[in-house]
Amino acid sequence: MTDSDIFDPVPRPTATRPLLGMTVLVVEDSRFACDAMRLMCLRSGARIRRADCLASARRHLMVYRPTVVIVDLGLPDGSGAELISELSGTVPRVSVLLGTSGDSFAEDVALAAGADDFLPKPVSSVIAFQNAIIAQLPHERQPKGLRMVSDDPVRPDPLAYRDDMAHAADVLGDDSDERMLDYVTQFLRGVAHSAGDRALETAAVRLADARAEGRPTKVDIARVAGLVQERLSDRIAI
Image 1 (cartoon, rainbow, N blue to C red):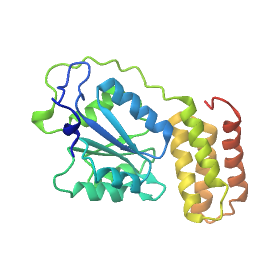
Image 2 (image 1 turned 180 degrees about the vertical axis):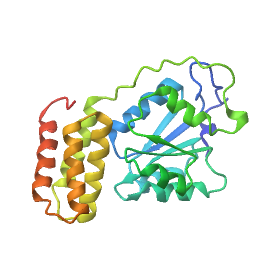
Image 3 (image 1 turned 120 degrees about the vertical axis):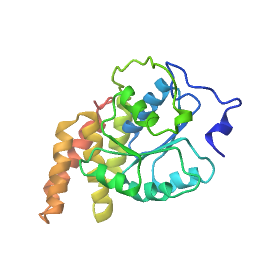
Image 4 (image 1 turned 30 degrees about the vertical axis):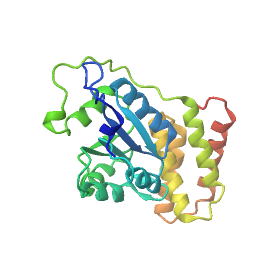
């Protein structure tokens, strides 16, 4: 089933909603980052579906073929580059395949895997979001004429950030799992960067550096865990 099957007839794009009639699958483990995508889809007229891991995305894609797939590179069950590589070679191919991450090296990884383009985090501009998608659509599907869209920055729900902190706290509770510790360090670095939480981002970067250099990490893990708990203790985290 394609996203077009959802609509009868398929709505046509308008000047204020240029992605009307399209479905965007966001493969993203951060609720905060996904809420930003939800708001941009809402302003653009697109429907959004979310998968929080590779397994969930693959289950979704067995049933639906969205117009756009946006894949975060760091996921709990593997690299988003794996899914990008799979989708880039699938026939029929999704119309638009984008990678996203807050890591500076991730753009090269996503494009090498077969992504059409890359959205660096934080993704806050509606116009940039729309342009990245529309530029990759087949010519006949690109909306014609001028677009009239407010580019006021999107503001994700702060409680979604708290949900991310709860997820991180659960993973940090078992720091004996080396793979998951690497995952949650990357996860917190990206989420904190998107939210402008400099203290948590700095602590996560220090933990990542310590692990990469083989230094003791007990103090760094405790520092990150303490910052996560501080944010969980507030009703609204940011």
